[in-house]
Image 1: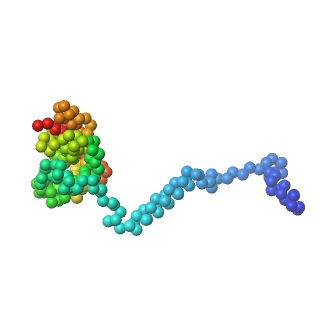
Image 2: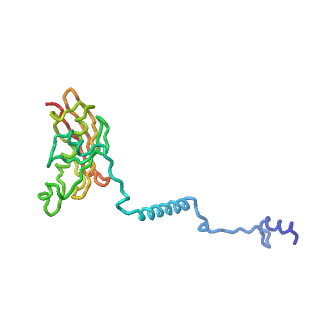
Image 3: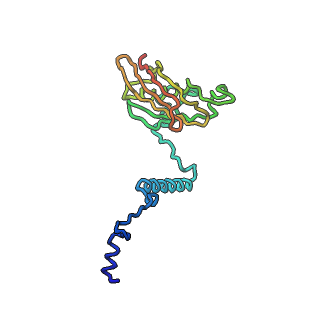
Amino acid sequence: MSAMALSNSLTSPLTSHSSSPLSFAVPRSNFVSLKSLRSFTLSCSLNGAEAADKKIPIEKRFPAFPTVMDINQIREILPHRFPFLLVDRVIEYTPGVSAVAIKNVTINDNFFPGHFPERPIMPGVLMVEAMAQVGGLVMLQPEVGGSRENFFFAGIDKVRFRKPVVAGDTLVMRMTLIKLQKRFGIAKMEGKAYVGGEVVCEGEFLMATGS
């Protein structure tokens, strides 16, 4: 057979004796969709990242919280002292707007022997107090005109406790100023507290800056 004849036979449709074209059905399972290929690639990438993480010791995988205000700077602003100073570090601060701080909850906290001896849970009222102190760090700044001599916790609304906070947790609290009435010395703040990224407590707070 000549090369031209071979070429024509390869490019021409196959026919049966009845001269009707033959059709071939290729199973769809033989094809790989682009979506499946992307999923496979993503899965391989995630598995590779997990394998890389496992090579790093667990104590080195999680960075420490940043320090915007340390405990000494906090003590210069808040009038609270042991056993009622419930803020250990400020990790974010926007003057006159908001603050994010942490409270390291340890079994050595003085309230655990009584709340409760067999199941150490941080009292909800102390969670609210700790959040109010973070609010104080916002309100007692020069940008707001507050003073530690005339700052009071005036009220709470819509407080909800979502999950218990236990010894060993790190309580992360965000307090945001919503409304400030300088004439009456009243500030309204929104607060949320988290453990491991999940909300454990939230509510609205009223702060009084008058005498």
